[in-house]
Length: 467
Image (cartoon, rainbow, N blue to C red; front, top):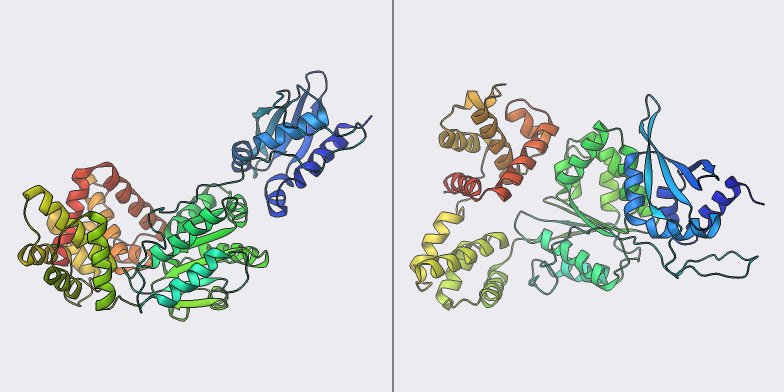
């Protein structure tokens, strides 16, 4: 008769045959048998962290149920001893969601002396890709400024497992379509290869997750999760310019993915060579694949984009108005989209035709037409005027509610309109650290989603700032 240890080793063997090797190494290799209570038919295994426990229960519960039933028999119950404090060796016992006694008829049963190597129903291994499913290649209008990146992006999306052009590094000014393109790559891969684990994440969110993992002493779990992804897409990597901890952690993730033939797609507002403050090892990695520039759209592309947006929204706009908008607001695809959305709102609310006069009024209120860059002083001044506070108040350590909100709005607008790294923003706005900036930006974005009134206030400040 086999011992519990031998039975558990057989469980791990079956699991290993039914998941990818990196998944086994990440989620199952760290599990260890604690004890098997034959009287109660309860199997207890140790788990290195709550994160691993939650991930296994959410994604592999069916697989565990089948394996345990095969090796330990029907009715066996699973429980976890989860390490909650590695410093003081503290743990807690949590129940498993899988009950191996249930019979779903899916377990292949071979001869009595033969153990199956593959289970016919694998556990769910997908994750939420966090993609914008509206940003596809079909809606990404091609022009001279983006022809090469679009063509390479489509080739990668058709065959993501090839080693060619890996990583793909897309760069260009704000509003030129970088985010749309990298989303389109992810959407196409997910549609063509549903089994692949595709993940889009902004550099700022990645940094927030890393900071949280550092505070909770779960960095290893954080790294293991990202190393389990098949296609990793990260936007605005320039925001890591002074975040040494984030850079170092991402380097290890990037190396693992690269060595295992996983696809990496990155976007930035500047080429790798201009990423001041970025680790030289990362710059080398960024540069070893394909570096593709998306330029600002020319007049022809702007006109094509305008015609597409007009058809999409069912509008009727004359060619003279289209030409004027393309010429005036054509430095940014995002500006073109904003102008069309505003024109549609005006025409519906006021039941008016979209003519040159209306278009000029909308552009004057929503598009910054001069070339002077927005500065931190501009932002602080505009925010202070709106909140009726002084710049010294914003720079102070005061925790008064109105001052805290004004300070957070300054950080949010500075991050949005200057693309400075978080650490630099923190120094310029009150002498805070980069984690405070990331937290503040997150709070403002959340409040804008939850409150239409607050969103209108921020838009009002922005209109004054850009006018």
